[in-house]
Image (cartoon, rainbow, N blue to C red; front, side):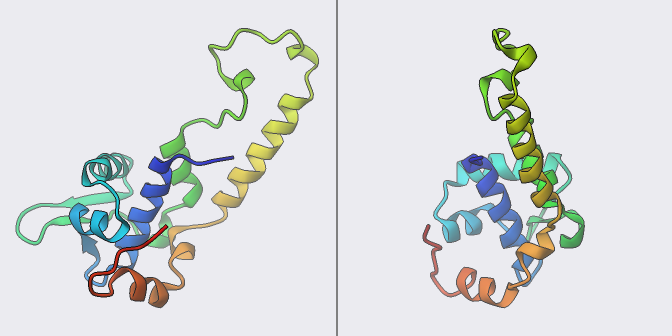
Length: 150
């Protein structure tokens, strides 16, 4: 299963803010460090805020911060929020015309099992798990003039 760049950026924003020494960051600094468009990150941050993963800090020294402790941010929940319902094949879509073998199809069950396994692994992890190497992440993300390369 391939995640969208929106999900990738969402997880990267959460990781960045979780390891930020002051506990908050700005969209501009995150965009600079990851080499991602500020415009695109604004949409990501808005979505994460609406879902209760991030909070906006207004005024001088404002920016964004985690709305919950890293231990309380489940990776599976973030991915489900950003990706929506998993649809690994057209037959999972509600608007798709009925497949001629739908009543006896085993493939659909196999694909659903794969999606469930994928989501099960994500559900076992939190943001805290993703930043347990905090010192290494900090050295990379907060080095002077660092830009993270993909």
